[in-house]
Image (cartoon, rainbow, N blue to C red):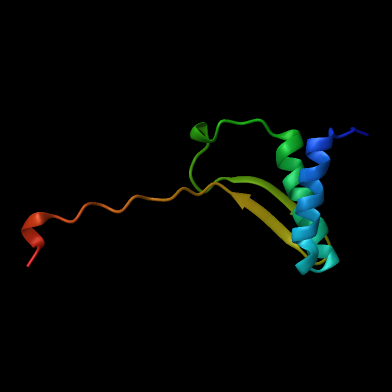
Length: 83
């Protein structure tokens, strides 16, 4: 079992408070998913293809997938199309 430093414990406490709006199963699955990403994965998102599932957490009632998705910048409006 890992011991978290005080900053990590504070952040975890904040997350737990935010999860209070979810059912206990959803909150647990969400927390597990976040902890899995933080504790088990060190990756460079630039090297991961768009749409790839980074991690999945599932229990009896909930399945959560974290998928890489980036925001696309809109293409500039062409001046000749302006009225």
